Amino acid sequence: MDVTATRQEIARFIDGVIDTIETPELSGDRLERFNASVVEAVRDYINPGLLENRKSVAEQHATAAVEWRSNGPNTLTDSRGNEYLDCLGGFGIYNVGHRNPSVINAVHCQMEKHPLHSQELLEPVSAMLAKVLAALTPGALKYSFFTNSGGESVEAALKLAKGYQAPRGRSTIISTIGAYHGKSHGALSATAKPFFRRPFLPLVPGFQHVPFGDIKAMRQVVSDHERMGEPVAAIILEPVQGEAGVIVPPDDYLPAIRQLCDEYGIVLILDEVQTGFGRTGRMFACEHYDVAPDIICLAKSMGGGVVPAGAVVATEEIFSLLFDNPLLHMSTFGGNPMACAAALATIRELIDRKLPEAAEENGAMMLDGMLSLWKEYPDLIIEARGKGLLLAFEFSTNDVGYAFAKGMFDRGVLVAGTTANAKSVRIEPPLTITPAQCRHALNVASEVLETMQAA
Ligand code: PMP
Picture 1 (tube, rainbow, N blue to C red):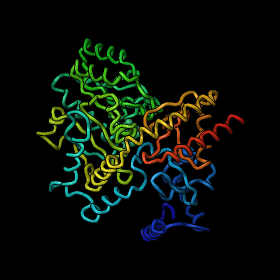
Picture 2: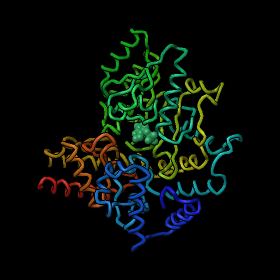
Picture 3: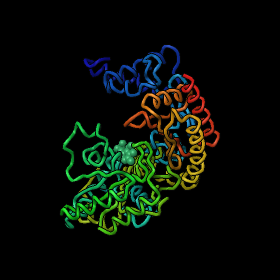
């Protein structure tokens, strides 16, 4: 089929795709034709640049890895039946593992009953989830607005903060160097990656970026803005910067930021899109530091790796901006009952199976092993770092980082560089990863590094 296909041809093509979806395994010619047609469709109809971007899995187009099935909670297979231990976790989607049965069951039951909302009657599942989030999130966070992604949660948080602060004459938003908050216009304005920003300048006005982890720099910028008559409305931060390559700030950073915000009446937005729901060894990363934000951004693993789901949760004082006009900020699909059912089941799994605790324990073991590898291969590795199961190696160059990720992939362990570079390689497995699987990943890493050293 090509772009000139008739409606009938399109329908018959879809029949074939649906038949493939319904087929448990492919083999022989059918498998080869399917793989080739996926590579062609990605190249010709999604983006040819993607094949270059994912070159560790698609370098040889004829043998490109085409994903097919999540196998167990921590593994997936490609269409040829090759199994991969997932140490990437969809960059934080799979905290409760792949195809978690409780999440699937909740979503399935909701789907059979009433998959999406009427938009007029009161939707019960989102109401219950909001109640759960108020109890689960730290401090006085209480009211939820539901979204479908991290970027949307950040947008909602920025609008809430701006709307709340407008009558107070505060409008400047401070973000941090290296920050990643998403790529929609507002979120991109808070994001600090030059190559993502440059083609779209000017972005939303009123954003400033200061070095991450540096409380002195933050204090200075806040006080300068006070004196200039452009006082700060909000500070937005990731408690641990994820896309920057897993940058953990000093332990006293977040408490000092909280104090600074309290001193000036600044809204503290914590973007826990990647760090939330147990990833760093606490339900939310800010709990490591005993800090509660005024607004928290959530997404990624909130839908249990089954349905996209996100939320922004705020204190009553800030959220009350929307009380008079609940339609001031809206989303058609945000808070849909399938996503909320997935989120409820996800939270129950995290609590019942003590997955944040498991992340802390297995993360400490992984980091120990990574620190040993750093000692053993100081010419290749510049640093090993992280918190819980949000971990990273920093390699000497992009080429070395790429060779490591490729070597791991070739031996059946998925890891990947950040969206910004190949030098920092993140290790972010499902929190359900077993100690034996952690040891296996470390052994494979050791084998790959040994081969690289010898080369
Ligand atoms: N915030 C953080 C901290 C993230 O890590 C990400 C995604 N990597 C986002 C926001 C954006 O999320 P999404 O891609 O779902 O819009």
